Image (cartoon, helix red, strand yellow):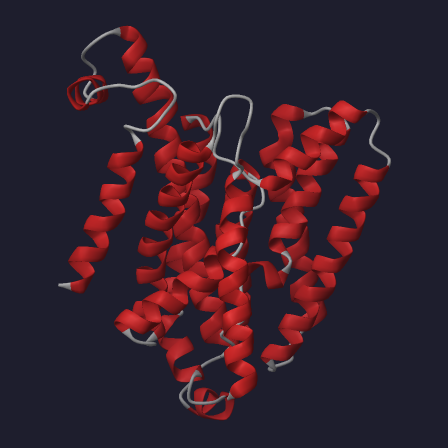
Amino acid sequence: MKLIILIICTLSCVLFSLFIGTVNLSFLETLKALIGQGSETNKIIIRELRLPRSITGAVIGAGLGASGAALQSYTRNPLAAPGILGFTACAALGAVIALYYGYYNWIPLAALVGTAIGAFLILKISGNRKSASTLILAGVGVSALATAITGLTMNFSPNPWALSEMVYWLMGSLNNSQFTDLMICAPLTVIGIVLLTLIGPDLKALSLGEETAISLGVSLGRLRAILIIGSALCVGSGVAIAGAIGFIGLFIPHIIRLIFGADPIKLVPLSAIAGAGFLVFADIITRFLTGPGTQLYLGILTSLIGVPFFLYLAVKETKL
C-alpha cells in the first residue's frame, strides 16, 4: 500500500507540473494539448516545453535518489551523498570548460567526459583497498581538485557574459529542457539505476560487516567498481543536462528508510521513485516563486531544503 501511494504521489507531481507555467491553461486545454489536440500554441507549450521538462526532472531526481541510497548503504554513513564522490564537481568542470570556449552545444558531452575522468581517477586512487573510507577520501580529493580548477577557469573567464553563463549553469535548472536532452540523460540514468539496484544484495551483505560480506561471496572490488560506475552514470548525466543539483541524494534515502526500512535491495529503487517525484515537486515550487525578471534556480532551492536536513543529521550523529 505504501509503495502504491509513493508511485501515485510521484506520477501526480509529474502530471501537476504540466499545468504550471507562465501561460495559464485550463485542465481541458492541457489534456487536449497532451494528446495532440487543441491549438498549435497549446501543443507547443505542453508537448515541447512542459512535458520534456517534467520527465527530465523525474529522470534526474531518480538517478540522484538511487545513487544516494546506494552510497549510504555502501559507506554505512547517513551523511554520505552522491556529491561526496566528486561526480557533480567533475561534471561541472567539464561544462564550465565548454562554456569557457563557447562550445554551448557540447556542454552535455563535456560534462559526461568530466564525470568519466572523475570516475577513472577515483577507481585508480582507491585501488583494491577494501575500506569504504578510502573511496570517500578519493572522492573528496577528486571533488576538491575539480572545484579548484572550475574556480580557476571562472577566474580567467574571457568576458563577464561567459562568467555569468557559468554561474547560472552551476545553480542548476530545468529551464529549456528538451526531448533531445532527455535522449542523452534517460538511457544513461536508467543503466545507472539498474546497476545500483543489482548490487542491492551485496550491499545488504555488506551491512553485516566487510569480513562477513566477503565470507558470503561478495567481491568488494567488483562492488565498489559497479557503485562508482552506476553513480557516475546517474549523477553525471543529470548534471550534464540540468547543472548542479544537490542534497536530493542525501535526504531522500533517509525519508524512504524511515518509511520502508533500511534494506538496500528495496531502498535503491524506492529512493529512485521518491527522488523523481521530489525533484519535479521542487521544480514546481521554483515556477510558483519565479516572478517577472526574477528566477529561482532549482539547485538553490534543493540546497535551501537540504542544508537544514544535513545539519540535523550531523547534530544527531554527534549525540549518538
